[in-house]
Amino acid sequence: MVDLTAQPFNLDAEGVQWVKDTIAGMTDEEKIGQLFVNMGSSRDEEYLTDMVSRYHIGAVRYQPGPAVEIWEQNRILQEKSKIPMLIAANTEAGGNGACTDGTYVGWEVKIAATREPRYAYELGRISGVEAAAIGCNWSFAPIVDLYRNWRNPIISQRTWSADVEQTIELSLEYMRGIQESGIAPAAKHFPGDGIDERDQHLSSAPNWLSTEEWDATFGRVYSALIEAGLPSIMAGHIALPAYQKHFNPEMTEDEILPATLSKEILTDLLRGKLGFNGLVVTDASHMVGLTGAMKRSQLLPTAIQAGCDLFLFFNDPDEDFAWMMEGYRNGVLTEERLQEALERILGTKAALGLHLKARDEILPPRDEAMARIGLPENKAVAAEVADRGITLVKAKQPEALPISPEKFRRVLLVPIKGPSNPMAHAMHGGVAHPAVVLGQMLERRGYDVTVYESLADRLATMSPDEGAKLVMGAYAGKAPISAMTDKYDLVLSVAKVEGLMQPVERIYWPASKGTPDIPWYVHELPVIFISTASPNLLPDVPQVKTYINTYDDKPVTLEALLDKLEGRSEFTGVPSTDVFAGLADTRV
Image 1 (cartoon, one colour):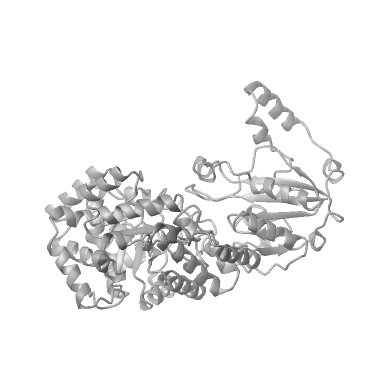
Image 2 (image 1 turned 90 degrees about the vertical axis):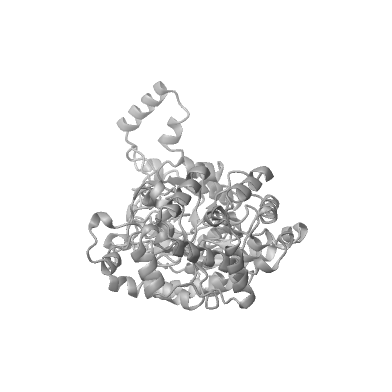
């Protein structure tokens, strides 16, 4: 069933022979090991050597670190591995997905807001140059989900659009850019996220479209990419009940499985109807959308038998390896399916030319590699994207813009947050809220700035007795409107709300009443609401008259925002999703 001479492999006779000879010379343990993509827990040489020698892993997807560390890690992996490795990174927003000192270009939704397809190409090109420099040859991008449900908490920034044709155009441009550096893109998350409002990290989250609706949307997207030579696809832990029942009419509701375990989705739909010949990898195997379906000992071989070729991440290497081996020996994973998976894995490696290079020549020299990271011309692209992408979504208060120190000298900055998320806090490493950063920038431009300290922030620094008195006073007291109008000329509500493995991506409103946290005072003072992450916050603040999406809070973005607020440059961004959420009151 695997044609290594056809798209996307396009191997010559020598490449095909290398694949077949390599498989023929492998032990059963080496064959099973090739099915695994490891998430490294260490960059130590002893650990890396043990992973490739004991478990014979076929691929790695690591957590980003400094470029020099990742280069060294990948050098060790390639030199110690008997068979060259696929080394993946999540270059969803730029080279920073491959190494922490790589270039952040912009989330896909920000790229789409520029209405300039060339920036999707630049996102792919810059990601490819920087990732390839440090030894990556595979990317878990582009994200080609369609954002059709504003309540979905996981892809609001990470995917291009709600529009099929725009998604196809930008995805093809990204592919073109990243493949110039010899990196295989993996489009995700098949059969498509953005329909359900849940996150498959945390629960089941099916795609509920009918077969006709799916064909006209996600089916068109994947068909276009496959026709263009897409090398690989990441299967999401996302069921597609309509098509599963189409291919298996006797299927009951409790037999519906996520795509990663579904023959109907991967073999019948993806391989059969869509004709995809390339590599399929599962999404991360710790996600509840997968683990909630069956015992881990069962789901490991079932995923490969269903049509996945690679299994993303060990839980425990000894357990998982043993369970995959057991599934092969007891026939859950058949010889035929194992052979197909191995041909696609090795075929992808050969398509990247890895079989033609000595193991110590796969990576470029270290100094040459470091010279490709974070180039000024690439950072300039990020600045262009920020300038063109920032979006004035709603402007119903003409007197609010433009701003200036002469017009609005006294500015109140109000930080707006999402649900408490320790993981997000750890990832951002204590970085100041964008309201604070924006306040510092405004002061340098001549404004008198006050950053509002919420009741919740004050309580965090108090003893229980002090906190109780504060809360009692907050509930008992009411302030005159003049307490705000006499002190401030302008209010900037600055939100940073991200899903990051939370069940919702919504604003967290504190329990205090009548305080500046919630912009209740939109008819008392000019109020500008700025979202620096999720672009879908208008349903929670429909009363605001001026609303802006910046899509991130990078310093270059915030400086570009201030230029636009002051009228030094135009707002040119155009939303690629329904930021009004289909609600009439958000437009008023």
